[in-house]
Image (cartoon, rainbow, N blue to C red; front, side, top):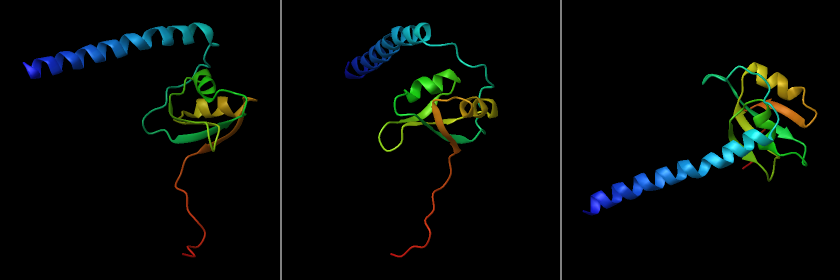
Length: 114
């Protein structure tokens, strides 16, 4: 009995979560501008860090080029990280709202000193 109840609860939560997302996605698609045509990024495309002006919503900028952010930055940086196709990188670089588009990489320090 306990196992059946747990499975039923899991299914109910999954269904409710899926239904709860639908109105938001439909409203966002209806309200936002048309996305820029792009080539969908393949799994082997590089991840980029995109910084945008402080008065611009990073998620909205990503949506304009059809990017799916891996992370939205709103504290130290104002922007997002996403796998981007070359077409998406070019489109972002041409947007006045975008400050930088840099390929993500490993950070290193100069000297250890510790």
